[in-house]
Image (cartoon, rainbow, N blue to C red):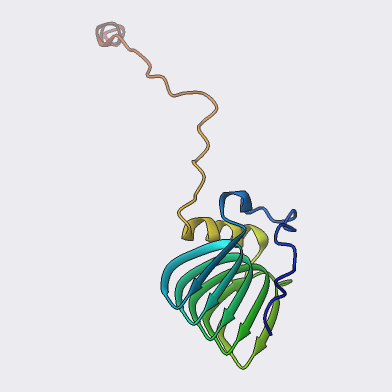
Amino acid sequence: MALNSNEAVDDNEGDAFPWEKVGKRSSAGLAKANKVAGIKVSTIMSFTEVAVCSKLEVVMARVSEAIVFDKVGVTMGYIKDLHCLSTTTQDIALGSVENVHIHSQEELVKMALEKLDMIPPQPSPSAPFEPIHVNAYQVAEGMKQ
């Protein structure tokens, strides 16, 4: 069964994923796509390597790896690896999902950011590193005692 196209696509306030940095809707139709990301992603008669989304619709298509936060609909399609939350809804009609991997919200967000090359910069230390200047002559003189 396909996802309802009238559903709101920006009801992801609880997600920690930065949805504002990807499109609201994205699709791959009659094509091969390496990465597809958006709040709602549709793959129709296509092959997709990685899909990252809140809602995924797979119709007569194949997805190698899907990272989905809210809902998955597969109609005559195939997903090899589905990474999702325990609350993610799966609606499969004449299709299949080979492997389902359940993750915590934090793990799923981290995985999605890594797959999309959106890793946030590492926090800098609280104080900048400053070298300590040592006068080697004075240290050597002090050791002669």
